[in-house]
Length: 469
Ligand SMILES: [Zn+2]
Image (cartoon, rainbow, N blue to C red; front, top):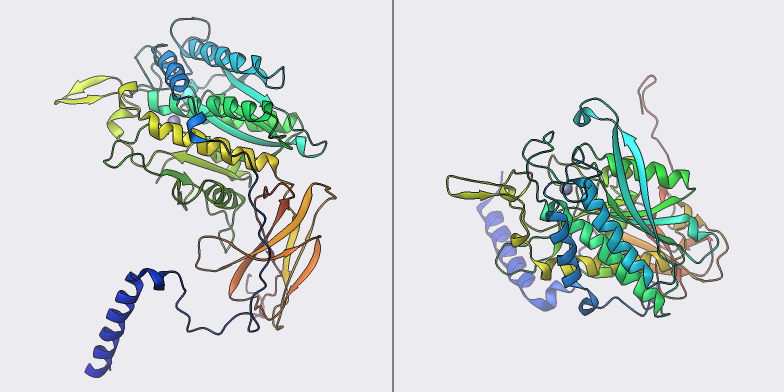
């Protein structure tokens, strides 16, 4: 039974908590009725500054993004089932404009940026059950580091579009937002990063691939093929940034933060590589720019990052803050006074330019970073200290490693300590039970790899014979 006195006390406490939480000074500090951990105080590691030469917002060329989107919309439809050979109408018209724009950008890079048109076939229930010819367009900026150049960071938008009927190659499908916007972000990222490299400030260690893929609306065909292609070329995927529907921001108060979706994975602590990529991007671009959403995609929906996520690779999706479904997947028409269709006039280039900047800056820092550590482990259960160990190849450009921890209920990592070399670090007086742990590599240039969560030491409790663990 709860006494009236108890209720009064509880109410008073709740009010006190409320008023304290509202005061800015209090919000800086954690309510702590828990024992200090570690008891003798946390180490105070020196935090390296982030790499110099950040991509400036004003360097984004919104006019060229608008120009490319206008050309793609003018192709009438970009359904993957439409014509690949007609230069004026159909998906092939879009491929031509994208390849031309990327070649224009590549011209200024002295051959560094390489443009590839990748032709392949694929079948799905949305190709009428027969193999469909498809093409993807890539621009590749090769990494400078002998080993890391086989690590590939991908930014991708899909250039195909669809009308209401996904099998109708005749109907108009302007697809300005879905996904000429993501295509423009990928292409503009190619320009921003090639330019940042050409001015001598950045030498990307890993390889960056700027993709415009087809077949998304027919079943993620182009992005699935890109993953296969990358493997065939001997790359490992360092991270995949899918930009899909990133062009509109109609709610009052725009520009708002872009949403960044990442799947939980299948681990108890929900630390999938995709989640680590999302955290990394948020840390690079800031909480004012990125709204992390801890789910694989919008509710019940899917996109081009999905095949990567399912393969256990780091892959995330950028999407505008608030979607208007009358402007997506709709054959242009007016019905009961409502206008349906994905038109250029609904786009917000201030918002889209922000997205391009944030993609480019995240890719820049990821491609400048050392390789993530491997084999991260946490041991020390039922002892006073947590022990974190990890492995890493030699790397003269690496400053060391940041050991990260977080409350199990917190969404973000914090730096606990710094270690110059791989091996084992004992976290004195830290329980293995109350936090999650991870390790990431930090370059001398200040760029960080994505975090690698420690694997749990399996210590299953004894159970009755015949019980499945
Ligand atoms: Zn889309």
